[in-house]
Image (cartoon, rainbow, N blue to C red; front, top):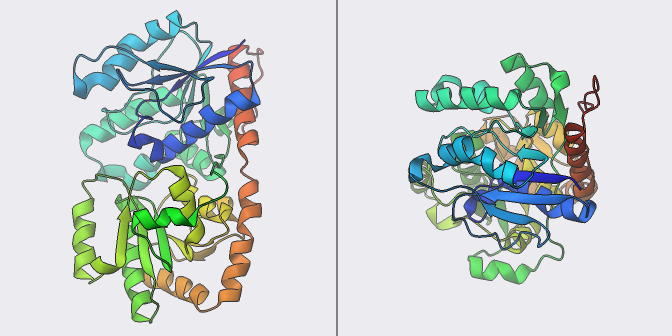
Length: 387
């Protein structure tokens, strides 16, 4: 029996709604079904309660003792985790993301093989010197640890290329495993009522983070309202963010406060209903490693207008229409074209489910299982195929 540990810090709370969180949740749900002989242990924060969504077959281990809340992640993962993992007889440990902030777990060095997923290199390629110095230093240190792991995974060809080019890493060391998509079936429109959402509405899914470009979505929405369309904008964002005040001020300045609904931390049935009932999804991101929300919208048969990023073209293919990146007028024009042409919008939406099926959970989990088995029983001179 293969015993695999998975870093699962914070997945009882709001971190499950992040991209790394969705990735980890998908793995922990699908692997027990795919490989019943696999023993999985999810390692949470000290004293973190077991997530209610975690399959019964997956063990839950709140890892380590917390002596200082601000240093808990570093202390438990660098000083305590190796002993815990050895005690649990773990064969392979998977770190599903490389964090920028030291309040989240760094990549550990362990007695067993370590697999790390580096979703992107955006703190280097997009933010660069705009990050505070302490975060730049921590991220470069953490990324170097990740890239020296026994196996490195990323989620798209575009991410692999950017990681390779920005760090000098041999791209042959980076396995590409696209994200797998999970959404509960049979959406219930009645769930929108308690959320305060009424149709028709346009959907934005992302965060307050400037890279996600909610500001452009608000500017585009103002132009859409001025063109006479009655839609509201529903924005799925995080609960708390230092970037929120500037965007809330923009909302008031544009006179849109009464026409925009902000939501966060939605259970999956609510999120599925929210996607399914939307007229279309607006995704104006400035940089991505993969692009989950457009694919989620596609799975729900909803038309997508996205920034014209190479990675989004890779992910979405013909199941989205693309607007000039960072250009609110181009974004508004693309949305208006679809709102004014229902037949074209329906045709675009109709391509979505087939596109989403290309990112099935079974293939996603199977590729990870292949990686785990390869590092647990390595064949000398043989590396896992990079994609």
